Length: 207
Image (cartoon, rainbow, N blue to C red; front, side, top):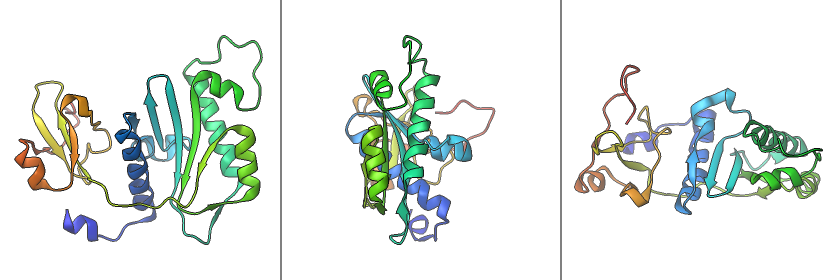
C-alpha cells in the first residue's frame, strides 16, 4: 500500500482516484455506488459514478483538474445530456406525452445530474446548471479516507479484502449492513478475519 501511494499517477489514474473518493462519500451516506468511469473507461458516456438510494439516482461526473482550468458550460450540457440519456435507458419517460428540454422530466424520473470538480466553474456554466437543475460542487479536492474494501462473498460467505490496485476493486461493493466495511490498513482487515483477494481469472466467478 505504501509503494502504491508513492507511485506517480497518470492523469487517468488521478481521475479514477477522484471518482473513488467521490463515490466513497456517497457510500457513507447509504448509496449503492457503481464506479462506471473506472470500469467502462471511454465508454462511460461522461457518467463517472452512479449512486442510488431508494428512489434517488444521481448521475455524477468528476473532473479533477488543475486550478488554472475552468469548467465551461459545454461540460454542463454534456452531463445533463448524459443524465437524460440514462433516464431514457431506464424507461423513465415512457409515460410522458411530451418531453421538456429542461430539468423537470429528469427530476420526475428521480434522476439527478451532479458535477464534482477540483477547480472553478464559470459563471455562464453555473447559470446553465441552474436552469437545467444540474448540481455543481466546485473546489472539491481529495482527502484521506480508508481505501481497503472488506467484502463478504455472496457465494460462500468468505471474508475477502481488496486493495486499490486489485483487479476487482472497482467492481466490489461494500454494504455495511452485511458486515462489510472500508479499513485503512491490511492489519485491520486481517484482524477482522478478512483474507487478501486472489488474482481474478475470467473463468471464475467474481467474489
